[in-house]
Amino acid sequence: MKINLYHDAKDICHITVVGEIESLKEEMYFIEVVDEVKYKMLHITFLDANILGSKIIEVLDRLQRDGCLRMFVLKSYLFSYLYSLGIQSNFVASKSIANCRDEEDYKIDLAEVHGFLAEVKHQYGYDYTLYQIDSILRRIKACMLKENIKVFTQFREAVLQKEEVFEQLFLHFSVNTTEFFRNPEVFKELRHKVMPYLSTFPHIKIWCAGCSTGQEPYSLAILLKEMGLIKKTQIYATDINPFAIVEAQNGLYPLKGLEKNIRNYRNSGASGSLMDYFSIKGEYLEIQEDLKENILFFQHSLDGEGILNEFQLILCRNVLIYFTPELQRKVLANFAKSLDHNGFLILGKSEGILHNGGHEFFYDFHKNLKIYKGI
Image 1 (cartoon, rainbow, N blue to C red):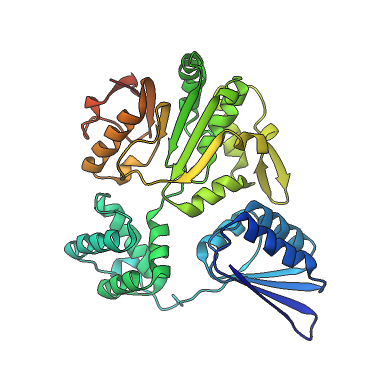
Image 2 (cartoon, rainbow, N blue to C red):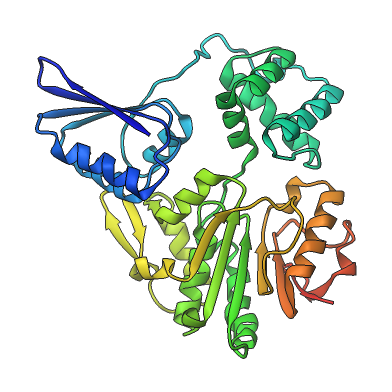
């Protein structure tokens, strides 16, 4: 990270941040620079950052409420994240899409896509060759539309030659749709059947695979705290998207959707108040700090080899639907190796183990809720 600073004749201080803010040291340096500014108005531009830490978010929110900040960002991911938290910024688009036609006008040859995915794997190390091709095509078209590139061969060259274009495609490939206590009937079964059984273990290890922006692991932490089990539990929360991992670590969430999250919480069998686990900061919520203590967030790809640990519970909900049956089988085999003999696996509402060979590794514990036990 590099910070450029200058002021103009209008008593405006301009701060330009080059590069991602990747460490706590860089985060504190940025805050120190901002705090030392004595001008009436700050113009802050983030040229490369896709995500910001919670301490910086808090400073930006304060400056905005004080009426002394104008902010400019060049990355759509950061713009969307700030907007969701009620922090206004100006999105500086690198390309104009004013003349773009409908997404259907973007014709792509399927054979070229398979070759392109192999090249992406070789160049960047991310393997999408066994993802569902229809989902891949939709996301490639969306990225082409955004980049205003109508010819797939030109898009292919841009992705392979410019890391910033691949970064945008990567974000399109990453699906981050989640909420607190999503599918509350699953958490109700966890509360009444699964966790009482796991409470007999001296230590509980849980893996949230594809944790997105953190709502699922925090929901588990809340449930475990209410059951008196949080102190002897370690939650491993992983996702392929490193920016989503930072969001999860921040633990900051928009007020929008709060009513649904509260409804989910109540329908999960809880008797308390969901708001007991948050602080209201401006137009967003901040998760209680103590709920982070037993969660380890880190980037991880499910198409890799090997096992992470020996878990008593693995949740991988609404991830396998984007994989081919071949990759689903590989992931389920790794889950089986990573699961304690008496452990549980929970999949998403539209997922199962019937068509991917998963019955070789698991059997039904609660078929309708997609809860399984290892064989």
